Structures are given as C-alpha cells and as structure tokens.
Length: 189
Image 1 (cartoon, rainbow, N blue to C red):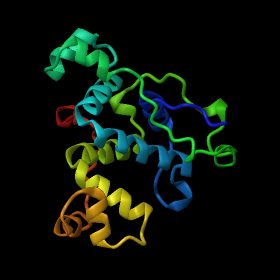
Image 2 (image 1 turned 45 degrees about the horizontal axis):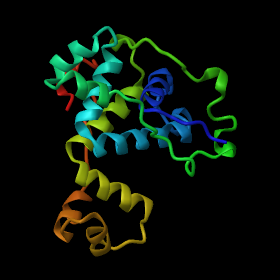
Image 3 (image 1 turned 90 degrees about the vertical axis):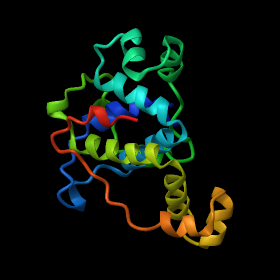
C-alpha cells in the first residue's frame, strides 16, 4: 500500500534527489517527477499556503511567529498553512511503481535545507510550483491537457471554467526561470 505523503515529505525527497538532468538517463525517477506535479497542484490550489510551506522548509530556524511576520499573516494562519496535507494520490503511486525507484533506505526522512547545496531537482520543482502558484488557472489547464490529450480546447475550457481563448493562450509554451544561485526567497508567493 502506498505511503501517505505530506508536502514536507515531498520537499525533502526533492531536496535529497541528486539527479543531474544532463540527459534522460540522469533524470529523476518517474515517482519523483510525479511528486513534483503533485506539489505543483498543491501550490496552485493554495498559493499562500504554498509560500508559507516553502519558507518554513527553506528557513527552518524561523519560529511560527517569525514566519507569520515574514509572511504578513497571523500566527493562526501560519499554523493552518503548515499543517501537513495529504499530497500524494494512492492511484498514482502503486507498489509496482515504487519498487526499485525510491527505496525506503534512500528516502530522506528529515533533511536540513541548505541553499548552497540545493539539488537541481529541488530548484526545478520550486520553479514549477512558483509558476503554478502564480498562475493557478493556467496550471490547471496545462495539467488537464497533459492528462487528457484527447480533449479539445472547447472541452478543456468548459472543464476548467475558462474561455476557449484563455485555453489557447494558456497552452502556449512556458519557459520557467530557474535561479541557479538559488537565492530567490523574495520571489515566494
């Protein structure tokens, strides 16, 4: 049975991944890539919560009160934002998919985030999540178009509650900017 995954467990796995992304043989596992997409879905669903979770993960020395001040929200809101959410989908991660791709012994249970040693996978995932949080409607259209390529733009528009012109615009290629120096905390939404 697949394990339950919180947003912080996925962030830890992404930070621990050491894939070079140089070519397809050195990309992260399918499971890690799927988890990146789940985290982007989480970011699009609640951009403010995503920003709080990211900041808490990247600056773990901050207390809840300090996070609240930095995010400009109440202490209660920070506590709600940082509550663990079930981000995984049992239908996505079957035992056969997990077998050999992400062995338990290599899974990061707890990782100390260090901006200078951030994995390429983590940086790419953060760029994707930042995009999803900034443009949640566009992210939902792109995700649905990817998951159901047989849908027409009119069908996508109806399912996503946007105009067909928006769907056409949203499906134009997106170039995500990845900060290789990874000092982009001010960009958190």
